[in-house]
Length: 84
Figure (cartoon, rainbow, N blue to C red):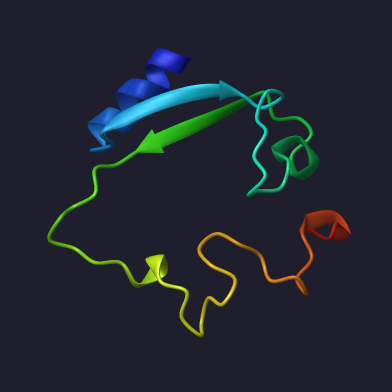
């Protein structure tokens, strides 16, 4: 299955594909995967090269994203009513 997913993603233009155990995932910057999706067994990681000719406004902490990229606002709840 991993090879089929890898081939599919690479054919779409992804630069690299990786797989990790959902149970082993531990990041202080994100909510535990197994709390959001208890049935998850694996995490599929897709990597893309950063284009030097492009700038992304999502990298800034502007007024539309005061908590930074990928961060949930403290007043927002996660699926199932959990609070980050």
